[in-house]
Amino acid sequence: MQEMILILDFGSQYTQLIARRVRELNVYCEIHPYNDFPEVGDHVKGVILSGSPFSVRQEDHPTPDLEKIKGQVPLLAVCYGAQFLAQQYGGDVQASSKREYGRANLSFVDHEQPLMKGVSSESQVWMSHADTIYSLPPQTKIFCSTDDVKIAGYRFENEDTYAIQFHPEVFHSTDGKTLLQNFVVGICTCTQDWTPESYVDSTVKGLKDQLGDDKVLLGLSGGVDSSVAAMLLHRAIGKNLYCIFVDNGLLRKHEFESVLEQYKHLGLNVKGVNAADRFYSELAGESDPEGKRKIIGRVFIEVFDDEAQLLEDVKWLGQGTIYPDIIESKSVKGPSATIKSHHNVGGLPDFMKLKVVEPLSSLFKDEVREVGHTLGLSHDILGRHPFPGPGLGIRILGDITPEKVQVLQDVDYIYTEALKEDGLYDQIWQAGSILLPVRSVGVMGDERTYENAVALRAVTSTDGMTADWFHFPHEFLAKVSNRIINNVKGVNRVVYDISSKPPATIEWE
Image (cartoon, rainbow, N blue to C red):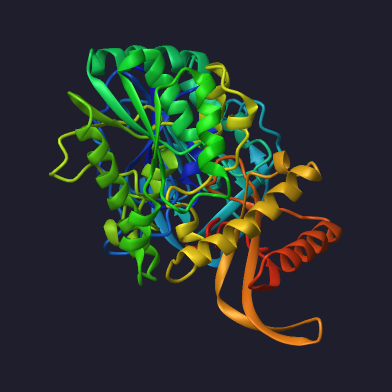
């Protein structure tokens, strides 16, 4: 089995960042809820405990079973994890006299400890906790401190168990990557051989073993995820892959025709299906975001099922599900804490006799692009901004009509073309337009208008888990706003969204 680092998640907003930093070291890792994780076999080279919004002083605080982990494999406990270990094994954790949040500098570092090799004695670290460790369990030793936090890091003697009260995974911890490399490579002895090339080789082999001579039906979207999934499956099973590109009526302007043209040159067997009317009919009158997602997901499945009936002996449905989809669709707190559902996560309904194959379900978005590059996909495909599975259906706030879709398509087309015209498109992780459920008063010519407002969104990110709004020149925004209002009938106001993720999401729904 692929060697890996296991990350146990206690609900921290930074857990995904831990995974990203580990993978940047060319080491595979997986995130699992603290109360539902796989058996720790020989392939698990080390375990990391994440932070948490919980306090160890709460009666119902998360309590993982570490019997087969602590003292058995290298263990790094971060923030909540560090406090949990301290309390669980005889130390004392109390509420801090003041909240320890933000930048701090180490004032003491024991460089004899393998975790701290190369970490500056005054290194900046990022704190984020309201509790602190007042006393340690027996047979432990402090290896770093700040002026305000004496026990910033400690180790259980005679075992590779380390604990820190700061977050090495965030950008503000200047030597965080060094610390994580010390743990993952130095202490856990990971080989750093998890690369895009190795992923392609192992995944293609795994797909061949999994699928054999079976036929696979795959829904293409024109985006990075489904295209890379298709190429991996194509490399594994060739002519047994059948691709369908569905026009759900919620695509961007001219997208259906242009995407089909692109796929002609990839050697894929692709069929275009126009199902716009079917989606519009099912979505009529539905305004709830989650309701729209579920309808769109269901109708996609129904369309695939109809098309599958036209083929003989199709046994699998291929999906471009990626790791953030999986992460955001489950929670350590249970289903009620899920941010949003994803139309391509969670399996298939009983009436469908197809099994699911997801070649990308362990990859973040930037890793998908790296794999696509290894497979020889063009920049036109790999450089495309992420586009949500439900399409414009979640960029139209409120109910969906063909008329609203056309307005938003026209707005989005003007916006996207302007980004490319000014050389901004490739600097942005994701950009899109949102049709707002409000109308505003305007004056056009000598007439009073009462028409739609649209919002523009553009963010920078590496994996979509966190994102900052893109700082456009004011001249660009003025140009785009003017073009939209002059050319799209029914729009008289354009606003720009300057919210970061968190607390806002990238999409509005």
